[in-house]
Image (cartoon, rainbow, N blue to C red):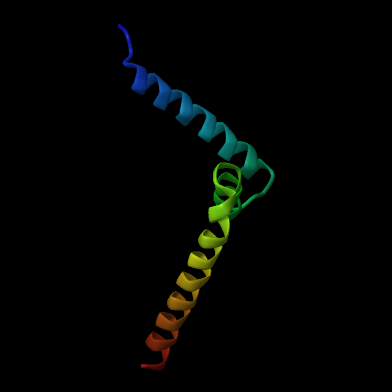
Length: 71
């Protein structure tokens, strides 16, 4: 049985990512920190956009929580 090139590439990528995530978790890193580390390595220019999006999302969720408790 031969694997198609794209499938073997995907399996290799999955293996590397699972190993990286496991190592980061063993260092007590949160999922947010892991995502930021990957973004910073792959596309450092977009890290600020990710952080801003996360911050805006958190403000939105905080506002929704306040509405539920006050209503």
